[in-house]
Length: 250
Image (cartoon, rainbow, N blue to C red; front, side, top):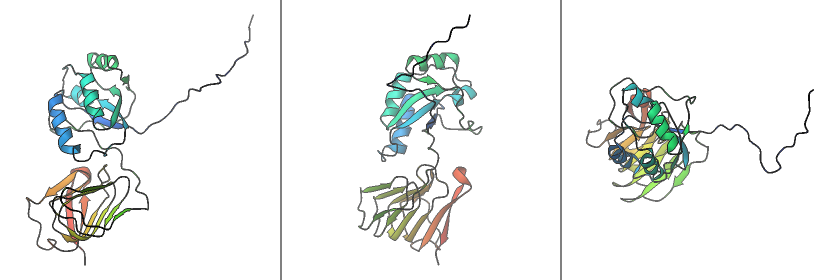
């Protein structure tokens, strides 16, 4: 005999599927000391680069390299939290590595789709892969004062417009384009979260460093005479593995 029971929905909660944008850390080494050094070198000067983004620890590069070394997930999680990311899951490791990840409170994310690890030679450790490029809103952050040595401005999720000089030792960072309507003599980092279409524009190009989507050039390499101290746009050709191209602005 079939018995039908009356159902009742909970009054205080519902459970539904959710999709979150995730940052992926493609880990290429279990050496956490080296990872700490490289994270500090890349993000130490940009304390608000991440905004408590959920993160997945992707161990597939270790697996591809045949590494079965044990990983201290508790220490790894503590290290990553210093940079305002929230490790929530792990994937791609050996059974022992995944068991250790679960024991550290991370979820398994076997079905997560992430980019395949590179087949080219790589450094011993990897910093977190930049999140997908964010859509840059129409409103830009406008700075109308000179930036002195030691000052830093970050236009998160938008373009940056600087109306005065960026002095040596100053740093301007944007997820979108950077426009400097004055001499650019400090550091300019456009497309900071991976936007390869970002550009840098200035009326006088004399930078200590220029970078787009992680591809950079420092003052140690002399600029071509046709752009040095002249109005110039800087763009990236060939994506994240490409090169910076500098074009004079007529």
